[in-house]
Image (cartoon, rainbow, N blue to C red; front, side, top):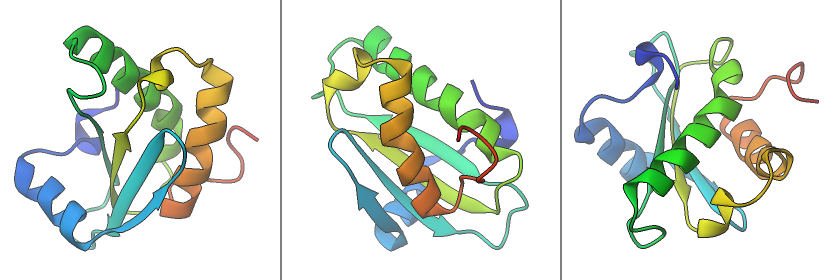
Length: 119
């Protein structure tokens, strides 16, 4: 799990990112991000619809896998609000390395990925 200072609090912040953010998408995931000059740290949220999995256990497992990949990148990142949306249930069953291959280009396009980590 990521630290409290890197998480969103409340729905209005997410709503702002969805309305004003830039986006990038690949086969299983999408990311929307916007710069936040009012904060010192980046914030990250993972959104998984009930259409992807009805089971909260499975949705939370996907969320934890994505947070674990993104967690080391958040400490050095600029103040960006990012929301990762999961569109495919295949994310639960693909390997950690494959998930990292899909997720890291999205994080890099949002400005959250440093070149030192995971390369």
